[in-house]
Image (tube, rainbow, N blue to C red; front, side, top):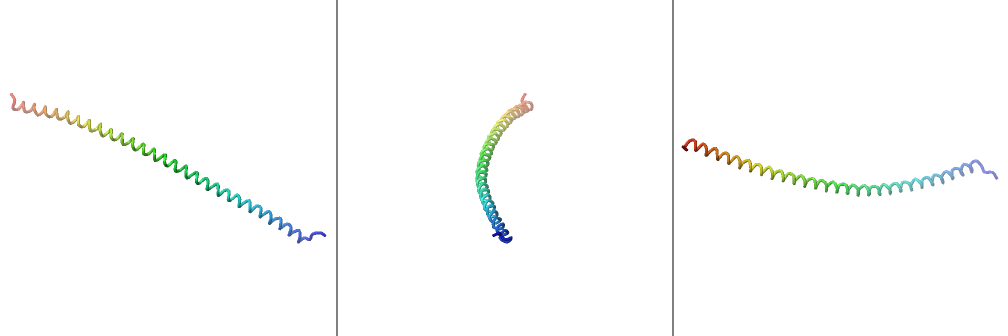
Length: 107
C-alpha cells in the first residue's frame, strides 16, 4: 500500500522533530560547555588579577620605601648643610662683633 500524503507529511514532521531535538541537545551541550569554559576563564582571570595586584602592591611598597629613604637622606643632608652654614655665619658674626668692639673701644 502506498503511503498517503498525510502519512508522508507526518513522517517528514517526525524526522524534523528528531532533527530539531538533536540540534537542541547540541545547542544545550554547547551552552553548558561555553558556560563551563567561561567559569574556568573567570577563575583564571581572577587569580591572574590577584597576582598582578599583589605584584603592583609590592612594587609600590618598594618604591615608597625608596622614596622615604631618599627623603630621609635629603633631610639629613639639608640639616647638616644648614648647621654648617649657621656655624660659619655664627663665626663670621662673632668676628664682626669683636672687630666692631675693638674699633669702638679698642685702641
